[in-house]
Length: 316
Image (tube, rainbow, N blue to C red; front, side, top):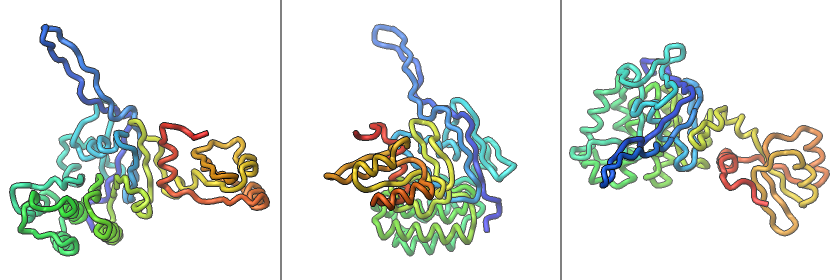
């Protein structure tokens, strides 16, 4: 067990802007560049002691949010607090909170000009719940040579070292930001299995940011979707799965059943239409669908995420 209770987190109306500055042109005129907005009024509560999937398209604000939680950056506006339930604090320049928070990025944040073992020693000294046995075992599983410098490792091996550090720290808040993208499929699946096993044995809060949603959604207890710098939804994975369903069948029959509902996606092949709809069917509607020969299907988290954040809207 970790020595500290799992950390939760809360963001209230958080704004993060980058790049706002004044500069002088060659003619001596001073101009002010407009800031780019990474987060725009983001509000969310992250439950302690859960595995939460953090989903968003490129540029949605995922990495910025995770950096805020790890005190890598500060909000332009709003508040961020992190910590055990009832004892959350601002993480910025807060050694107690940051010592219990581990953000792992794809690069692994390793010391490039020294052996991998040196990076492990650095994290062991920084993290009070560090498990040397876990680190040694995982690096053996991932076939990483401790004597090599990170710069001599492949992208996949570097990612494996980062994943190992994230698990071995056993931090009350552990954040994986696309750390597994460099790994091949067998290594990714080994990482997922190791994560679940270590989470069960040593409960803490884990955030997983990934574009490989289909692979990792089985791990999620909660899901957060970020879209355009705002939190579109934050709920249990089961609640998200219940947000939508699909209908497949004859065009007219599907059209009648879909009437009055928000269509998230539509495609047609010949006389057969498939639509993804928001919400759920009641018993009478299920019976009507069966009688009309329309197939009702579940929608995976990945498909719902894609449809809910599709900027193109629904095809006609």
